[in-house]
Length: 255
Image 1 (cartoon, helix red, strand yellow):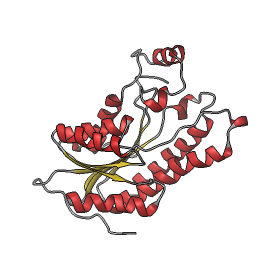
Image 2 (cartoon, one colour):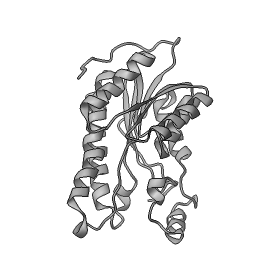
Image 3 (tube, helix red, strand yellow):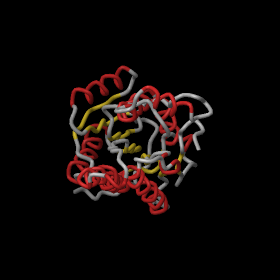
Image 4 (cartoon, helix red, strand yellow):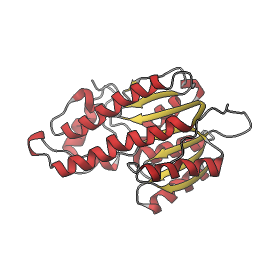
């Protein structure tokens, strides 16, 4: 596995380069499109659906950016190293890492399937560590790392125990990483969406449940992937660089 440092200074004559895991659908895909529209070259990391990943690449190109799709299991350190290698070989380096890949299972703690718990934690905890490890080694000066948590860490709804446990781990690890990168000029933050209209969120919910969750926010609607992508784009941009070591609860005011 590569252990190269990331010390080169950004220049004004090249685009910033972003690696986005989970970039083929949902919030990750919206983030790919937003960063491409902002002028980034984007590596779209995906787990298995190449057709969706290539569609995300096409959208990024249509938005005015450059993009490639690279398959990688985020919990596999060799595949993730290859993902970052692709960013360096295709576009010359890495400035921004957005780790949007994730898994969710809902069950009471008393009834949770421990096999599913292990799978959940492999993606959400180990996967975040593996991606963060490569990001810490490779992101260039002036860059940004964004991980994903959930506003459920504070809301603590029943049946979300396994998911919350995994995302609380992400929050803690991300805050430590922000401090470990002292002197590198890289900001590190977590975005914690509230109820957001993605396939993963909507799966298994009836309309009454969706309407009830939408009404929780003072803004009285579900978030959209574009809402969350906008928050990510700010944190990744020079304008958001002073925000560091924070959990940004992008949830329309749900508390």
